[in-house]
Image (tube, rainbow, N blue to C red; front, side, top):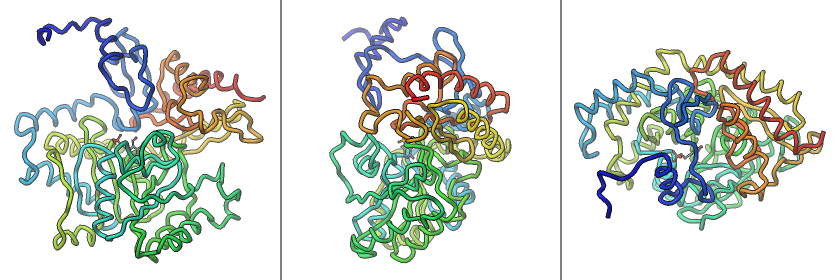
Length: 456
Ligand SMILES: Cc1ncc(COP(=O)(O)O)c(C=O)c1O
């Protein structure tokens, strides 16, 4: 073994460790090191060569309040000086305070929280709670969803190419279509369809054994990586009625959409529907510390006074993460960031619609708040996707990856390498009008790469 004090760390050494010693997520392992980021500030980040880029992705939709906010760094440091973490069977001030804050900002009587370290874990906990509460096994999820990388959460990510390599496990899954009006799986048109995608769920529950067998339905209120899909106004109220009819629990995965992303604290607030369980991560600490959370309604939480709660973790409610989250949540309120997301989101959508008029490769534009997607097509009339579904994660000849590379050359990152035909724009909630103009200008140029693959 070499002396660990003297591991060489020149640029070339680090590049080699990246390709020889690391696993990179969701990819063929690269032959070349990715760009190394050395510092960040606000909406920008800087690489090792000293070049600065605009972040139009909030780093997988997590850095909602922008990078390196000194108020968060102070809160984190103050907490670190007092108490970094303690065994979760004891109370700490940050964990108890944060639990109350989460109960205040979430809708209805969502009021008891289990804290963990990621969105994936938050969904695992949600499914375990759902199974334990209902005593049933079957969980409905929707095609083209992403709920996380572990066995159960990945099994429930049906239709996401990342799940194809996975051996199903942990849960008895039923898949149903999304309210994806641009490509309706029932071949219908809204509103004449009378929301066939919702009535279908009612029928699936009945055929699968009704309230005796089906435990819950897990969904992203606005589908993220798989297409920025915003359901129509009646969708969640109608789904709530169906779930109430069968006693099936509604589990809203707000990992991406929570904490102001869509212009309200939580996306479900747009529909005024209270889910039975809500999961969150990313925006809760705005990525300053790893954290996830699973929040349940009062009657579900109360059940576990009588019934053993069979879940836990060493870092459940880590004090540094909780103190960070408390400061971040206050910043959303102090700086009116959720209002800014609503206002700037409208502007971003307007500008994105102008791109649709201009580019033959942009078939559809949709979004809610600062969560806007451009769906890339080969042919606007036929809506033929730019990349066939089965080819999405192959490295060769993927025009969307080329768009992502072009964006970087031009000085910006967006969510261009996710598993759909969507290029998503999700800048931090502190974004200004001027920065949106700058980002849209760059996107306008980068889309020429996709246009070259589209029929004019
Ligand atoms: C909707 C949704 N759920 C769950 C997850 C998993 O979260 P994490 O990567 O923190 O485990 C993600 C990640 O992007 C997500 O978008």
